[in-house]
Image (cartoon, rainbow, N blue to C red; front, side, top):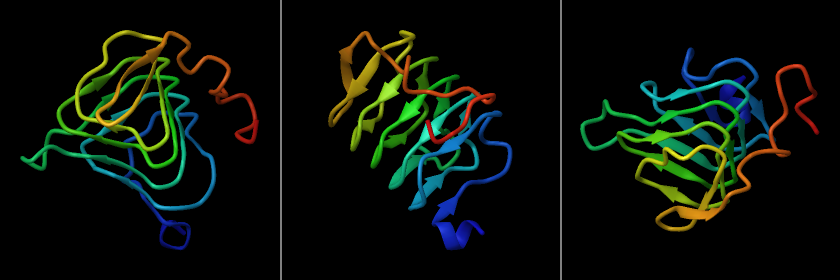
Length: 125
């Protein structure tokens, strides 16, 4: 099914409550870890650093916009919203913020509140 839908997502990378907004290319490194209730869009890549082993550690309730590229030995805190087409190559430890740009930087204190649906809600909010 993943080939038909364009996903390359290894097992045990995402916590419960993953919401894939729509079909399209999503590539995830096997060493990445993403917490609960992540909402991810198409054309997204979560990759490793040059060593091929160190991959992002992403918190709970994170929104990942279309086309985002997240890579390297970095940490993304809980409740962060990552804007469309952002390139995230450094850690963001502050919870509940929005980041965007190339390279990504903090743009707002709003975060993913109101964007993320929990595992008990419908993914098509």
